[in-house]
Length: 161
Length: 161
Image (tube, rainbow over all chains, first blue to last red; front, side, top):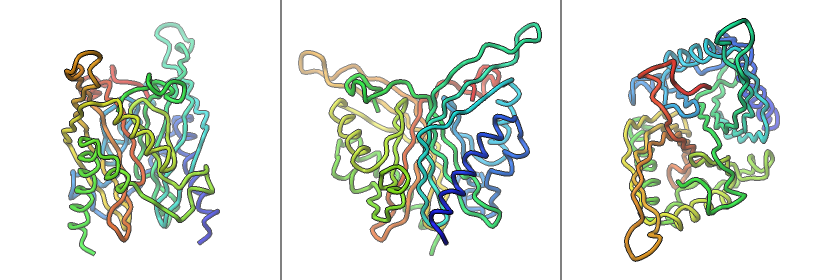
């Protein structure tokens, strides 16, 4: 097992996730999410173990609920582009942790006429957890959240807890 | 390996994390964070692999940066209590994923006089990733984010991406 190759593979899986979002490709996105039959999660919350938190949303659990949320987001998003920065990968055995900053540019459907809705920029940080499967690295958990302030600039003015 | 016992142990480790926060006990909190010498993270961002996102904050990486942030939060928090709800645990081999809702009641130091500052309620969702170590389950990654809306009530009005 070559750790360097693992790291590269995980980073590619992470990028593929955002590429699928940009293309509005729900089938590709579905294939990237873990489809586990180990049943462990099912004992502890009625799900198959995957979980997803979109920025500002509560926790979604289980493939069907997670994929439904992506379908909903895609249906309301005419255009979306992710510029990933500050990507860090930590691989341990068959699990990998990816943290990154999603610099998002998106636009909803136009409200009238044929033009694109107004473009909106968003700064989001994500923690993505992947598991190694015979088919490659698959995402187990995604958690994205809005960056509301930069505590580096003024620690005392940063968001609390 | 008893999966049921693993799940219980992970839930206890998760609770211990919030108990340490409530007590303002940085030493206990430090002991609960993974102290890895595997160096994998160090190759990919100069850290030892742990990561932490407080609600609204950017990603913090590495034990020293993460623990410094907790010391900062504790210094500015006179009172904090976590009511954990909707806790779900998914264990796979030596890694565990916990998602939960943190119903937080907190108060900062009083600005004048000796009384407690005003109490503030916050609704936060967290994804916590644990790793099994010889000393027990240790936290590898914490990601907390504010819940800004309930998409269940009106999907079209929910936060985007």
